[in-house]
Amino acid sequence: MAKEQREVEYEVDSDISESEGDMPEEEEAGFSFREFCEEAVSLLLTAYLFIVFCLYPFYLRNGYADVGKEKFNFYKMMTAGGFGLIIPLALCCVFFRIKEAYGKESGQRGGEGRGRFHFSATDCAVASYGLSVLISYLCSGFRQMALWGEKGWNMGLVTQMAFVLSYFLVAHFWEYEEKLLLAFMAAATVVFLLGILNRFSVFPIKIQGANSSFLSTLGNINWYCGFWAVLFPIGFVFYWCGEKIWLRLPGAFGTVIGIATGISQGSNSAFIVFAGLYIFVFCLSFKSMAKMRRFCELVILFFATCQGLRLWRILQPDAFDYYDGTLSDWITLSRATLFPLLVMCVVYLLLLFSGKKKNVDVRKYKMVRQIAVFAAVVAAGVYIFLLVLNTKIKGGIRFMGGLSALVFSDQWGSARGATWSAGVEIYKNMHGWRKLTGVGPDCFAMYLYTLPDLAKAVIKQFGGARLTNAHNEWLTVLVNEGIFGLLSYGGIFISAVFRYVYCAERTQDDRKRYLYIFGLSAFAYTIHNVVSFQQILSTPFVFLMLGMGEALIREPEKGL
Image (cartoon, rainbow, N blue to C red; front, side, top):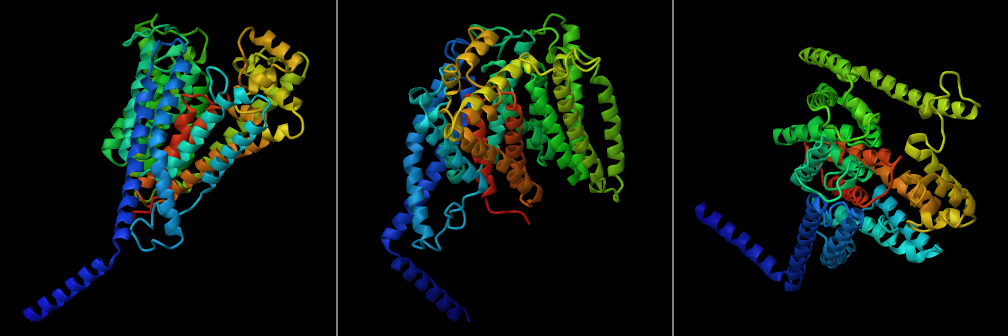
C-alpha cells in the first residue's frame, strides 16, 4: 500500500510539474508584473493618503499669512508628485484588467476582485461631474481664471479634476486598510486639540498672525469647521458601532475632543452638523439595543463635554477667546445642557435595565424613530413658514418681527441672506446654454462683477471683500457648472450616503460595518456646506473619503 501511495504521489507531482512547465514564460512574467503593478499602486496610494490626512493639515509656512495659498501649493505639489508615480502604474493595471475582461487571463488570481470592471452609481456621478466641469471650462468666457480658480480659493478646473481623479484612483486601485483610519483620526484629533487650546488662549505652537478668527494649524474658522465636518465622523462611528476595544477607546477620545472643538470653535455651521449626525445615528440605532445604548452614550458625551467647557470657563473666566453673544459663547457658559444631561443619564440607566431582559427588542419601538423624524421635519417646515411669513408681512408677525433669525434679509444667517440672494440673482441673469454649463469653474466672482447693479449691491454690502461664492456649495456649483454640474454633484453625495449606509446596515462582514464612517462623513460635509463652500482643507478630504468607501464596498463579503 505504501509503495502504491508513493507511486500515486509521484504521478501527481509529475503532472503538476508538467503543467507548470507547459505554462509559457511570458504568461508567468505578465502575471507577476500585473501583481507588482496592483500592489505598487495600492502602496503608493496608501502613502499619498497618509500624507494628505496626517501631514498636510499641519503644514504651515508663514504662519496664518496667506495660509490658504500655502496650503494649496502644498496640496498641488504632493498631488502632482504622487500622481506622477501612481498614474503610469494604474494605466498598466487598466491594461491588464482589460485583457482579463476579454478573457485572455481568465482563471488567474485577482480576477474575482480588482480585476472586474464594475461602475457604481457614485462612480458614474463623479465621472459625470468631471465631464460637466470640463464642459463648463470649455464654454466659459473666463478660461484664464477658470483654469486655476480665484486667488486664495483655487477651485478651478485643475483642482476639480484632481478631486475626481483622486476618487477614482482610490476607489479602483487602493486596497482598504482599516488601521489607516486610526492614523487619520489621530492626526485630526491633534488638530482639534490645538483648536480647543487656542480658543481658550493656550498656544502650544506660536503661529504668526494668530487671532480669534484663526485656529490650530488650519486658519480661518470656516475652513477649520469644514475640515472638522469631514473627519469628526471617524471617531464618532468607531465609538458608536466598534466592537474592538482598540477602535472604541481611541474613538471615545476622538469623539470628546471633536465635540469640544465643534462646540467652541465659533462657526455656527458645526451645530447643523451635530444635529444632522445625531438624528441620523439615532435612526440607525434601532437595529439593536447595543447600538441604542451607544447612541445614548454619545448624547451624554455631548452634554457632558458642554458642561466640561463651562467648568473651564468658570475656573478661567477670561480664557475664552471669541466674541460675546455667539452660539459658541452661549453654549459653553450656559446651564442649558445640564438638565438634558441628567435626563439622558436616567434614560441610559433604563436602557441598561431593559437590556438585561432577553425579550426586549428595540426594533419594536421604531415608531419612536418615525415620530422623531416627523418632528424634525415639522420643526424645519414651521421655521421656514415663519421665516417666509415674517419676511413678507410689513413689520413682521406680532412678537416676532424683531427676531433677526426669523427675518430673511441681507444680514440673516451671518450675511448668508446676502450671499444666497447674490447667487440666485447671478443665475437669473444667465441665459440660454449658460444655465446648463455655468460660467466656469470658480468663476462666480468674475461673472458677478460684470453685472453692474448686482456688483454695486454686493460692494455696498461687503465693502472691499470680494464675494467668490454664495456660501452655499450647491448654489455655487449651480452658478459655476450649471444644471449639469449641480445634478452630477448632488448625485455624488446622495448616492454615496445611501449606498454606504445601506451596505453597512445589511453586511455580515465586520470590516464593511465601517462603511458608516464614509457615509456619515459625506453626509456631514453635505449638510455643513449648505452654509459653506468648497475649499482646499475640506473638499480634497471628502473626495478621498468617498473613494475609500468605494474601495471598501467593492471588497468581497468575508462574514458568515
